[in-house]
Image (tube, rainbow, N blue to C red; front, side):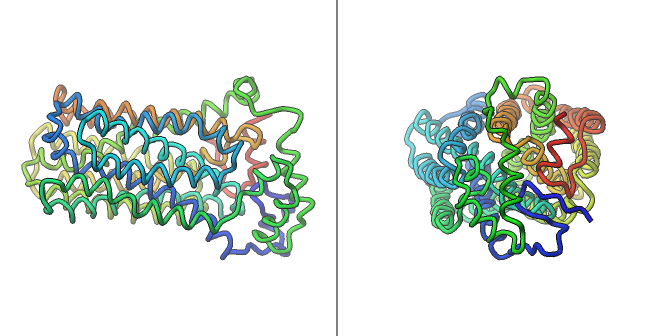
Length: 459
């Protein structure tokens, strides 16, 4: 029997250690709600595109900028979130994200000029980018190793639920009149307030408390998380992993020891985006309208995509700690690539009968949700050593948002200049490049403690 401690708070193979599931689920579930706001905030714009395009008089270049501008804020939020989370704590950082979400939604909804609209989209991006880094980190630092994959995957579940709620909100508000797009944006204040209130009920993570020298407080949380665990031994393992004689600086991150794992995290994060998912999430109604259906029908088909996204993420949660991270990532790349090629061929030959485009779009989204969507967040939240986790995760998440920005900004331009068929083929090529990279570079982390994972990547 393996009796080593886990960096994620549990001796999962120790019979005396019984995870306090109610406490773990409360803390992890609340942190995962940061993903719901992430999904809602990024997807709500999909239903507003026809209206803001008319209201602000946008061509395809300015439309791409208006939709993607939030991602510049996301990149900035990810860039600074690590230092903020280290200085002020994971919990307080998430509270700040909830406030930014609410301010952004209301501000964008009542904007009278494009510059003000984009300003509030940037503000929302700060919250989205920070939450995308801090929420998975919070869960990874508070979850037992045997549950960590599923619990961090719940963050992706919250994202897709947020996306689905945004699609439903758009569909319901679409017929209320000329100001429908304003209420679509402003509606995100409701889940933001819900997130804010629930955050007041959860604790700080033991790892952050140990990092700040607050070991007594950390011990209290450890005892709540895992009944029967040797708190002193657990604290010692966590404390040793920080190597207090050093600090997690950028210079340290770029040393020979840590540089390989940093690059793996960056590439995995970038591949999640350049394989095209947010071109589908943001522009699905536009893509469906290209097949000749009405605006209302395109919004309804977009809701179907949201539902499939949620269902497939449940599949990921069930498989990530059984099948493993590596296999799911490889399978996802292949299925997504095939689906995108099929969609591209449909547009190339203008074959839109029998809902064929919808079917292959659903296969693509299902493949993403069950693999790349959830597993990437799990993987980048756990592969970085304790000492550099915040900074490394910030850089990986920053890379993800920059890739997302490039895809979102370029899609309307590529679709007009190259056509949807060629655009989808480009994303498919990235799927196969991602497969080759992951086949050679990704190591399995299933069932391992954070300290054990550290030994896989750092000599």
